[in-house]
Length: 312
Image (cartoon, rainbow, N blue to C red):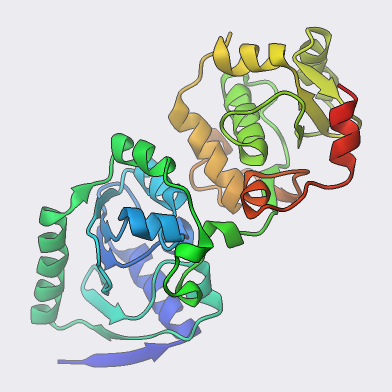
């Protein structure tokens, strides 16, 4: 039996190579905040601690779980799970690394890799046994989990994972917006707004959209109809009529899954969940004027917000 010890960047390089080459991937991992740490695909099986406590502490991110669900990964929740076991093809990895940005960049991780057939069977059986007793993470599970407030103070070991409260304020948007594709443009438009001011927007909060050669034909009709109030550059405000038009009684209905695909790309900078026709499009970073994260931190919006708000 050959067992190798790996640590640091080598550990993640080995994991990514093995995951990319495997036809199906199985994992039992305590916590996840970065769904794109490894290349997951439809039919993969992942067991996570997505208990209320893990979500409330920020140890497991509902956004990351939702992204995996959109990718059609089969996800299950088992409270108190602390193992980190990955079975990729003919290799099994056992170690300390959660699926988080801090595990990839800041924390000192270590683990072992083996191709021993008995160890592979045992590791796979371990994942399957957890799956069989776990709760299925589906739309109803995620809808309930969305309502759990996240608090850094609930964390028992803040250094071990990335709390959503600690995510950078930077968001991402398409360098070329889907202006001639009404359905995807509406989904992208809604996702951009939700990423900046939350899923239940209020009139008067500023947000950024995009500037381009087609800007006038994209937003002028919304301005004329008093759905949006331009504030200069790429900055707009929603009106009460706009909320009715885009959320309460939408003229163009789009699937929530399409909005969520754009939303995860906007939040993470990953193109994996974009619609197929936009999969190869480039994303560029931008700084939102306000964000749900900043408000939950108790942080103040930038100085220009007060002026913009009072101008309504």
